[in-house]
Amino acid sequence: MVTGAGSGVGRAATLALLGEGYRVVLAGITMILPTTLMGGTFPLVTRIYVQGGQTGRQLGTLYAANTVGAILGSFLTGFVLIPWIGRQDSILAATVVNLAVRGFLTIGVEERKGLLGTSEVSL
Image 1 (cartoon, rainbow, N blue to C red):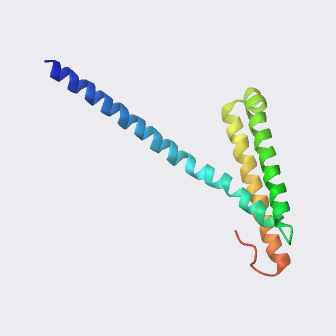
Image 2 (cartoon, rainbow, N blue to C red):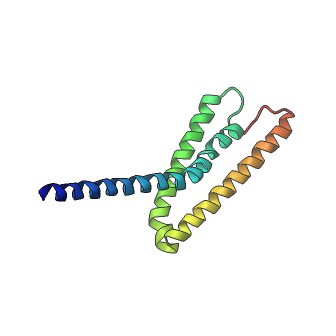
Image 3 (cartoon, one colour):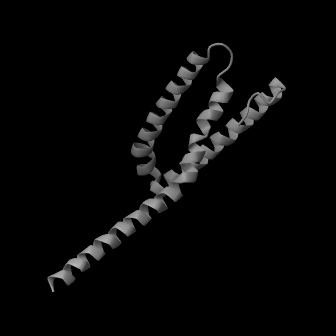
């Protein structure tokens, strides 16, 4: 009789692990597109900003600006946006800003291609 109770606990633990695995997979599927799009902005900025012989200095400045922007964005989101407009609207605002930045950067890369007259700059 004790054996039956033990197998029930084992089944419950297995189901709990499967449920947790499902949640992890679902979270990964949900996050792959936005994180890929957000990660694509830095290479675009690099293509536009870094030119000529001072690549190290320009890239360092770009990384510093990116870090300051990440810190300010985190601070403003947590302490200003979410209390002011709520979680859902903050997510929507961040999405709109990211899409707008990506659009401007894509236009900037295309304009730079036209100025150079080559396909030296690529997405």
